[in-house]
Amino acid sequence: MYNGIINIKKEKGFTSHDVVAKLRGIVGQRKIGHTGTLDPDATGVLPVCLGKATKVCELLTDTSKEYRTTVLLGVTTDTQDTSGEVLSSRDTSALNEQQVMDCILSFIGEYQQIPPMYSAIKINGKKLYELARQGMEVERKARTVILHEIEIESIDLPRITMRVHCSKGTYIRTLCHDIGEQLNCGGCMEELVRTRVGIFELDSAVTLSEVEAAKQDLDGDTFTRLLYAIDSVFPDRVKCQVHEESLKKAMNGSGLRSSEFVPISQGSFSSETREILLYDVSGDLIGLYVKSDQGIWKCKKFFYSM
Image (cartoon, rainbow, N blue to C red; front, side, top):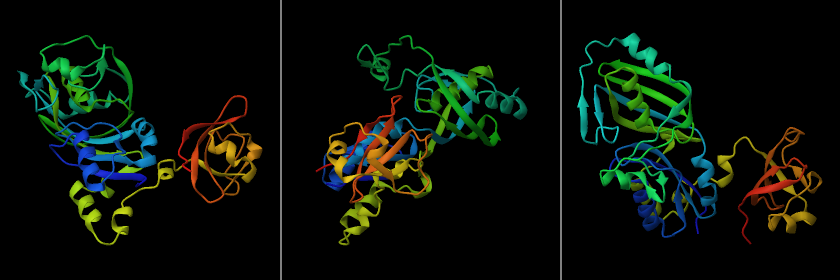
């Protein structure tokens, strides 16, 4: 079984589930999971976890992300993007660039966002997009999201292209819609590219066809070179090695005291350290450990296999 993460460049027309299904066929293993959905019309970075790395799927889903998007002002749709049915078309000739820039940049920081009906959020066991396809609309509670940074790359009204660095759970479609609402002309998302998820960037992403070609290469290393190690997604965590006498406790996911392991890098561990990556004496990753208020290191994610 392969264990690691592939930085996939999702292409238009594929759902995130399509990507996983195709990879299962290419790689020849079932244990594969994606790290957060991308709409079929969206493209870009989609880290996919294989084998033991599936345990970090939710951690990658929780990380901040970056997108490049094009907003189309003057048009609203039922899906908040141009793939949906047009609900209204309004004149935008009265808008000027400064007015648009001021509006967009006002969204930086915490922002109360109501999730769109066309989303995978569940209410009473039903996904919102399933209800939307039945012509239903239900009340959704606003959620706090954070827009860390917005960089406006170009304005050619009624279109604006911008880069957005945001927290987990942010719907860029809804941001585009809300910008249009604040400008009193309506708006929707015309294009979306996810350019970064955590450490994974678009420049280093590979398409499904490139993965397939690497897997078919007689040189077995061609495919494995595409895999990122599990610990690569924790670049800022201190690396520690468990003492031999405490290995059995660690292998069982039991809590440890600081005296039961030693930092691998000199000077990397301090009283302020709150999370560590724990390895055995052979250098195999055991798990991600978090320090409790009582000073005991407890396993947050266990990766070890006998």
